[in-house]
Structure formats: structure tokens, C-alpha cells
Amino acid sequence: MKLMSSLPIKERSYLFARGEELPSSSDSLWLILTGVVKSYTFNDEGEIIPMGYWGEEDAVGQAISGVEPYLIECLTEVKAVMISPYQLQQLPAVMLRHARYVEQLICLLRHQPVEKRFLCVLKWLADRFGYRVEQGRLINLELTHNELAELIGAARVTVTKLINHLEREEIIVRQNKCIVLIEKHVRELVISGHKNTLSL
Image (spheres, rainbow, N blue to C red):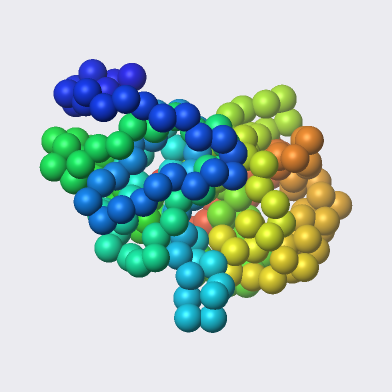
């Protein structure tokens, strides 16, 4: 791994199963080696507020955000190593990428109406965690309708209706528990002002 070769990490790596939570503290971070996690917190009403989705070579933890409570859930099987904030300072590229992804997601979540926001977020997920297949780009995450609803700030029933509508329009297809963005429609999802973020 490129980052591991540039960082003198002696700590052992840990394996986590899908659905497990990574222990979080204010004085340490997790460097993701393989897999995908989501970070989130709660508001006063107990509703989940997603903070981001993180993958290989991303650093995540309360020490980098300052938000409390701060939880980290594995969306896939994950291999990660615990590092200190000081060690993260030795990796400025990781810190810059973290800030960039947060700002991208904030911008995407401002889109209206909700269908446009949903499409933009799907495209962002496909760019970050997907790969090309014959039909288009597959989002390699088994996200539930509820998780997608939490991510875009909508009701679960709204996401279910959106997915059904996009399937009928042949903009997406479902492959097992994953979503594929159809290639011939992907470029239509490039939104003015976000071409660098959303284009293939």
C-alpha cells in the first residue's frame, strides 16, 4: 500500500465485519486499508446524521472531526490500523482528500429537488466506490433504502419510489443488492458547476 510504505506504522491492523463499529476516541484515528465505512452522529431527536463514506487510504475518527458522538460503521469487511493525529500530520494528502470529500458531499446534498440530489449522490458513490461493468458503473456497496434515505436527508419511502422510478426509466438497474448506473445515462447526470466532481 502506497501510504503504508511512507508512514512508519508499527501498530497491528484489525479486521472488522460488515455492520461492526470501529472503536472511536478523541485521541486516535483509523486509517482504512481495505473496505468502506460510514461515519455518523445523531441530532437531539435521535436521527442519524451521516458525516461521510470512507474507503482505502482514508483516515476517519473523532479526532479529525471534533463531533460528538461520532460513530464509524463498516459497510463492508474492513481492514484498518489505528494511528495518532500526529501520524496523520505526516500524510497531508490524506488530510486534503478528507476535506475535499466532505465539501463535495455538502455541495451535493444542497441539490433540489430530491430526485436530482439522489442522482448526484449515486454518481458520487459510483465514482468513489464503484467500478465499470458492461452496463455502466456499479456502486460496490450493499446500501439499504434506509441508509440511502439517511444519506440524502429524505424518507425511506421516498428513496424506494425514486429507485423504482429510475429503474423504469432505465437510468439504474439493481444487481443483487447493488445499484448500477446505466452508461448511456451517466453523462446526463453531470450537473452544471460540478463537472469535475460528477463526470466519468
